[in-house]
Amino acid sequence: EVQLLDSGGGLVQPGGSLRLSCAASGFTFNNYAMTWVRQAPGKGLEWVSSISSSGGNTYYTDSIKGRFTISRDNSKNTLYLQMNNLRAEDTALYYCAKDRDPVGPTRFFGYYFDYWGQGTLVTVSS
Amino acid sequence: EIVLIQSPATLSLSPGERATLSCRASQSVSSYLAWYQQKPGQAPRLLIYGASNRATGIPARFSGSGSGTDFTLTISSLEPEDFAVYYCQQRTNWPPLTFGGGTKVEIK
Image (tube, rainbow over all chains, first blue to last red; front, side, top):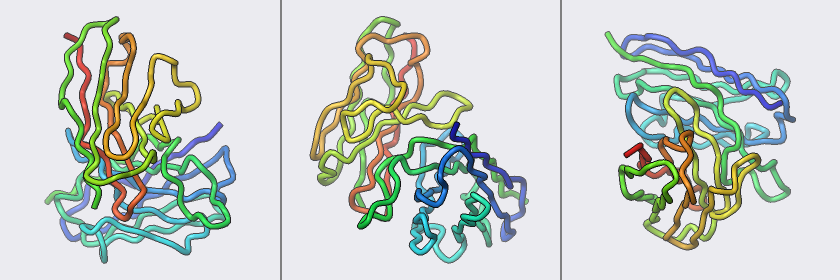
């Protein structure tokens, strides 16, 4: 059974840092790209960042570039999001999500997400 | 950036009725569009991928259609558990990967 367990959220002051983790099980982690998606309270879904299966390709939404870093440890089946210089507008529930399709010879990323973590809440407030 | 516009924002229907949700893209995404369902306090769940393919375990009352810029999610006969928020999503021309703003299907 595929499981994604998000953790690491909490209350942090503006300018502070947090590291989110997503522990994966039930599938061959190093065959799949992974993604972070966030949802501000009462709002819709927003893509945050994606990483290829090897970790060699990473992408970020503009509002977090230079502040957040996505990474993965395939030996530990774990995805990370290092969040620095946090702002009030980063307050959200953060989900990790697994690509539906494994990587291919010429494709680093799929198009869809078939499993999601339960989310971890990040609150940025003084 | 490809913008996905979902309509209506809210759909008020009764159990047993048919629901028709729309997602319009600002430029073509071919058939690379997904639909997700999200219930309160839960993570999103993949319903439809490739515009018209049901994900594993999704009931046949859910169907998707469309290509290019116009897409539709249809729920043929609403069950009580179908009242939720639905999002469309694309990752054809990215970054950024984008989601629509969502359609809430509520009980009338």
